Image (cartoon, rainbow, N blue to C red; front, top):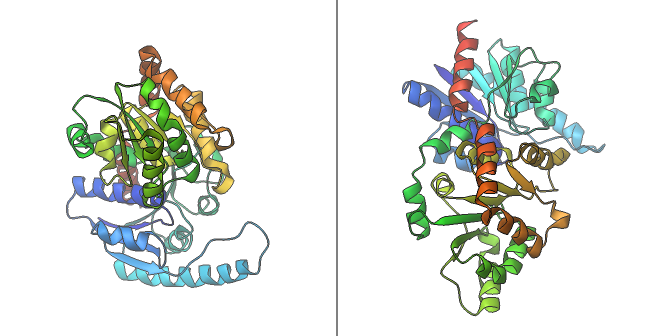
Length: 369
């Protein structure tokens, strides 16, 4: 099969596409791929590292407020459609799959106009503008959250598949996770992370919370600060405590996140859809601090889905303090029954076979042409 993938802007759009590619490869190593992304997007760096052939188009997103820049965006969109048609005619795909971000717009639209089967995947509980636009043209709309199908009333077909990143973490080796952190096997680990680049509010709470960690001496805390905040966070903690306790581990970035997640008992993080897919696939309880700086406040909607299901405790960033965060962690870690209940709720939300479900639907689309 020949497959075009498109999606970009953030890792939350890119990594689901990569997960779909890996599922195709597992089922048929002869699958051919082309990834079409933005010329200046994060995907232009990440996708070649995944050994996927990459082509780019020049495209930007619409501004939600009236702006002359939107006129330029329309022109770029039309040019992007033209460029995408040329790339698609040359590659001759059997299917085109969009995983979000404005780069999907011209690529999936061009494919639909050429009569190529298309799928778009929506990671968040609240759909983005691009996917809302594309839903009337795509052959299938796949959603990460059960019940979100109704957000696409104009779709020809909308199905619940989960997020394919859930499949990626299933084979993660927890022993390697412990080893990479330098933590004894089968320790209790609380992972605190603010996203790949870090988050100022969460790092500030990490620093303020450090003196309180002695109340949970049997728990290993891992602070993932992001490169930008690493030195400042480490020095601020050290100046407060005088020394770094053995059960506190401060790192700038985690390169083997699936393995580290597999060794985690509780996670504190933002509420990005791909990350939630990974944590629920493994049944990890969470304390979620949704970013308020995202389109449509979709992270809060994501977090509320987990909180309503009993899998998480949510703290809005405006209410975040070191004391509030530690009290949530302490409540969960000192009550084994609560932690177990949250873990089971998290697991029920997980969709570890997501990538396989998506590939099965894609094969159905191709075979029904």
